[in-house]
Length: 80
Image (tube, rainbow, N blue to C red; front, side, top):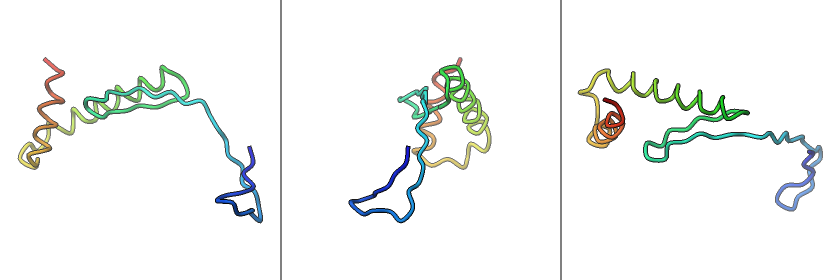
């Protein structure tokens, strides 16, 4: 798709926009998201985000603010 106009102004040179189908996997409670061009890729990205956050939360527990500690506790409540 070519865009020839923005904000009611004609462009000197149109630019091309590629619109792709995108899947989003999300956990709204923890505000964690994954995206991909298939459901499987979106889910894998979400799982990787969980792993990354989990590993980050286990390091340097003294560095958290009160909000950070609250998020950490909420996040860790999903695990045994």
